[in-house]
Length: 258
Image (tube, rainbow, N blue to C red; front, top):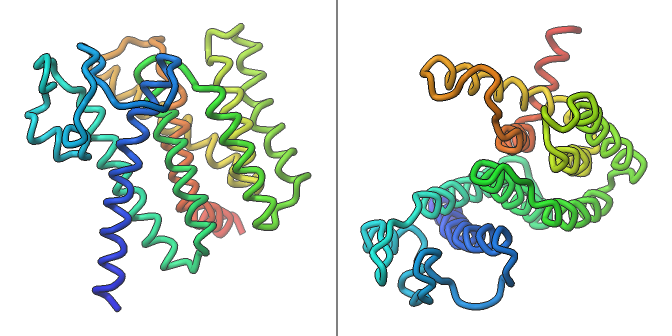
């Protein structure tokens, strides 16, 4: 049994590597507003890549981090996204075994992870939120949560709270504190977490993580006080934490109070 579970966990890691490779391609095509169809190409020279140049992680290693055609450096984003996605997929499968999740629930986790990766990279690199990805992803997530038994009223209320929280900040700061895309992310979080306690926890953790990161950057003089940081990366991180451990954190917190 242990060997069988280990095999499937490793298989899910490999599957995650493939999805991570696809996400890298999708992120670039979305940013360039190109179709997701067609062969992958080098962003520098535009040369179409061979199939063996697209093997997750291994191609980066064999090519020594450079394009085969123009010798330009390949961004570390590509292997890192592949490895992180692979690890998250493997952990999701292990988590599903421990918690008795169905295949559809496991797909839900895979999908949310993929959205988080896209949002994280997009906001980190370009200070942008891919709104159409958020909208389309949110529609699918709402459908899945309704199928899982969540109340549509709870989902809509949670979405309203999430979007309003960031919307008020946007209005108060006149768009200087956060971007319009973060309002859409607030609605997405509400769709993912119909349980308002989990939504509040995810928002709370976002600012805790963001504050800690900002403090470290200021201490090491990487950023100055008042420097802008992409909120989407912290939202993505808190989303994953709450996705896997949110209920335990909420139960622990209420156990301290009561």
